[in-house]
Image 1 (cartoon, rainbow, N blue to C red):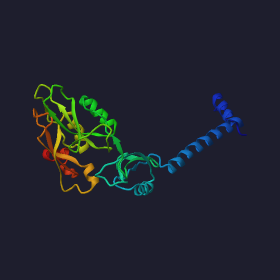
Image 2 (image 1 turned 180 degrees about the horizontal axis):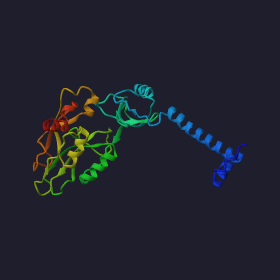
Image 3 (image 1 turned 45 degrees about the horizontal axis):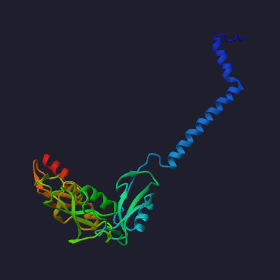
Image 4 (image 1 turned 30 degrees about the vertical axis):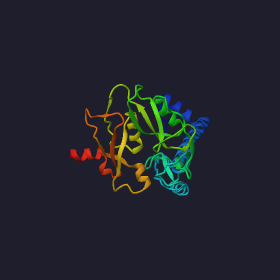
Length: 281
């Protein structure tokens, strides 16, 4: 005659009865089914949205909008116009700048913001900056879509005050219509001393970046020379300064209004950092 197994503890028996109850079983089945559906959904979403997958942004600078749109769509990206400029060295109607920059990593369907070179130049009215300080004049010119061009200093008691404004060698009056982005040459007072300024380091800068630096130091461009690697208008915009004269040596000084000659290239081997690394090997 079989005997009943009394080895099970009272606690184990109670747990067995609890988990065998139909209500508890139903709850456990629902919990496991819910977890299965949740993790299954995550797997499906990861597959269809390419979770974590980064796409490389193509370079659309120099392309027409139609060409840029076609290329971006093939890379599963979209574009949005953010601004328009007018640059004479760039083909009208083509992309001048883009954000994010080429080779940046983005997600699918990301908007790429494009700045396009306008088909026709926009005109603005020339403001009156004579008798203003250089800082005020620069701010006013830039707020009107104009840039500071050549800076000349003459002996005058009021230091860095604008004495004359001119465009292409001719004095320009207030209200004269002029192409947006034009450079306005300024004559500034030198003050009572023959003040000098340190020679800034322009190496590695683009021409636009270097111009801003020179303006801060009250200096001008002298010779601007491009090497054989600069072929297209896009190359000229993206080129960097690999040599300057005079060099930015410690203690080097220049008279206010002096010029610095620069040489530009798009050859990465000529970049200052690349040159330093090569010399250190």
